[in-house]
Amino acid sequence: MPLTEKPEQTPERLAFYEKIDREAYTPLWAVFSDIITPEPKSRCIPHLWRFDQAREWLLEAGELITAKEAERRVLILENPGMRGDSRITTSLYAGLQLVLPGEVAPAHRHSQSALRFVLDGSGAHTSVNGERTNMEYGDFVITPPWAWHDHGNDSEQPMIWMDGLDIPVARFFDASFAEGYGEDEHPVSRQTGDSLARYGANMLPVDFQQHELASPIFNYPYARSREALAEMQRQQEWDPCHGLKMRYVNPVDGGFAMPTIAPFLQLLPAGFKTEACRSTDATVFVATEGSGCTKIDGQVFEWGPRDIFVAPSWKWIQHEADNEAVLFSYSDRVAQQKLGFWREQRAQA
Ligand code: GTQ
Image (tube, rainbow, N blue to C red; front, side, top):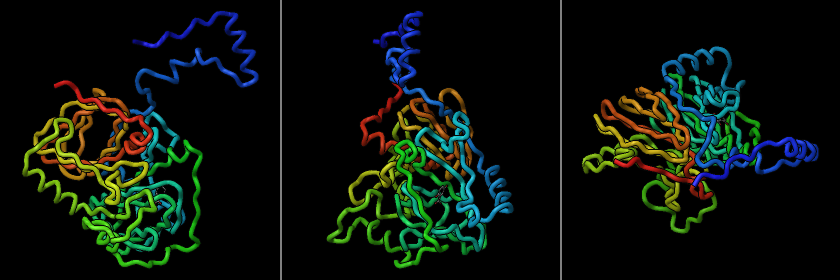
C-alpha cells in the first residue's frame, strides 16, 4: 500500500509551521514522503568515463603539478548528478591517480579506506605499513583505514590506477582524520610479498588473531584472480544476472576484503547477455578486458578496456559482452549488509 499522501497546506497550518520554524522545529508530515521514500531516490546518475580521455588529461596534469606538490595527483570522477561533491556514488569516491617515473606520493594516513585498481603502466609500488607491493595491470590493492601509505614509481613508464575510497562515508559520519608522516616514504620493514604468502595461500599463521577490519592481504594480483575465473569458466555455470561473479574476501573471516567497500571481479563470456538485476548498492565498474555494453535504467553505455562506468542504486542493470569480458567493480554493499539496508531484485525471466 502506498503511504498517506502529503497533507494540504492550509493557511493555519502554514502559520503554525512558520512559528515553530523559528525555534528549529519541522512537522514530520510536511516532509515524510521526501525522507522516507517507498523506493531509493538519488541524485546519482549513470555515467561512463573513457579511459583514453582520462589518460590524456592525467598526463597533462603531470606537466602542471608534481605528485608531491599535489599530495596525490588525482582527477576525481564526479557523478554528473552530484557535481562539486567529490563522489561517484552517494557513498563512494573514485579518482584516477598518476605517478610519473621517479616520483613519490608522500607517506600519509587517514581514516578513509582506499582501494587501488591498476589500469596503466607496470612496476610502480605502493607501500602499506612498511611493506611494499609492486603493481601490475588489474591488481586490486588495499590501503586499510589509518594505515601509513606512500606510492612510488621506479619504472620507466607513467603509472595510472583508479582509487576507490569511502570518503563520503567518513564525511557522513563526521569521522575524518588525516596526517602526514613527515617524510616522503615510510620505512620499509617487511619483505615484499610477505603478506600474500602469510595470508593469501589458504593458510594463516597458527596463532593469528584478527585485530583489523580490513584483509591482511593488501595486493590481490590480477594474474591469480584471472586464472581462477579462467578455470571456473570451463565448468560453464553462469549466473543469469552476473555471468561468473566473484567477491574479493578477507581470508580471516570470509567477509568482504574491506570494511566499507565491497570489491568484485566478474567474467562475461563472448556474446553473453545478462538478465536485468538491480540492487541498493550503487556500483562502479571498470572493464579490464573485452568490450560490450551495459544498459542502466534504460540508457546504454558501450565500454572497452579500462573504461569506467557507474550504476546508481536500484536501477536495472543489464550487461552484454561482445567478446569475452572481465569487469572489476566496487560498491558499499558490505556496509549496507552490516547495517541491514541491502536488497537486490532479479527480473522475472
Ligand atoms: O593515494 O592516498 O584518490 O589519500 C584520494 C585520497 C588517493 C591516496 C585519492 C588519497 C589517496
